[in-house]
Picture (cartoon, rainbow, N blue to C red):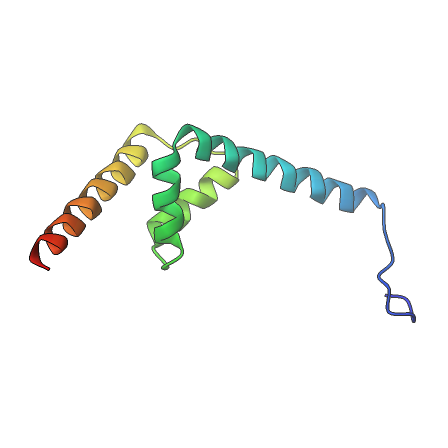
Length: 93
């Protein structure tokens, strides 16, 4: 930081490499979100509450790994169970 309080702009190769890596990560995550919107929304919601399995799947997506059919099936089952639970709870109210 300069004495004036302004942050120096840098165009170092390390910064541009980080920016490219971030762009690739965002692209991978966006591609998954578009291909699997329900699953992605569920993973985000559950990861925000500290659900480790959801967190690990989101990290895998961000790193460029492809989720297996069994992993996707597990997420879909969780969505279904969650939906059924909410329906039962609404029926009791």
